[in-house]
Image 1 (spheres, rainbow, N blue to C red):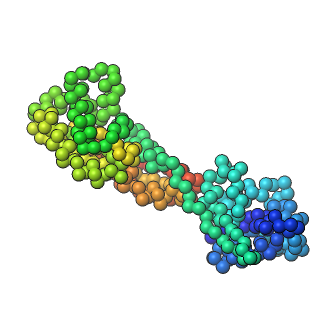
Image 2: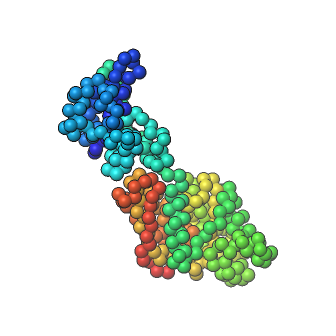
Image 3: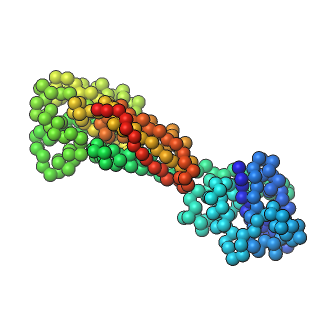
Length: 342
């Protein structure tokens, strides 16, 4: 891998000592150390270094031989270095934090390799791991659901985040059904319940609960709470069935949901005849290199989130691949391709 050496920063290390000039020896040792580590060093210096460095003649020879590149006069060396590093996707050996350029270049910590000199010996550090873009999994899921809706498939969007417990899930399911029967569709309830897919089917089921009880309750929980929620699924089904006096207990399906906060839950209630056995579309995610591993690791949770909110019994196939064209953290693209049928 190519590593740009911030020649001025390296040469100036230790300059605070009285009378010390920027050191060519510092620069040469840095280049040698990087080569021993298997890197391809590429020193870039600002235009003023040739006038300040301690061994001017040797440094000028390096410039003439192309072993050190000098930025054009009047050019900001830091910006030049960061731009080259971005374009060629390489690291930077420097102790400069480049703070004034962080709005433009968001992955500086991931590129920058720090160093230190102890008793004239250089120590090469390691760059920081790239930071995960906040809520990138939720952003991907939101985009996927939006794309499914463009194909005519409504998704569940209600977000109450009620505190998770077996009894709380059962009560919420019972309340959502019984309140609509008792109160009718006033404006407030309509705002809430029309967001449940196939609401008319659920209402029809409630009005004739003695003979019709085939519906599914998707319990959406954080991946952290999945195992505990699964343990309560049977009791929830029995409780709801008994309270509503249904001939058959509803099916309770627990799903990992990336929108749901740990310790809370959401419910998506769907009439069983309207459940999609398979996702009509599978999903291809093209992602930048920075986020690829994280998104790939969570691809099944992404599939679970989308399936539960669409009311799909089987998960869509979610494939994740990196692309060099996605240059910055947070960049991704989604395409749907035909999958299973209802």
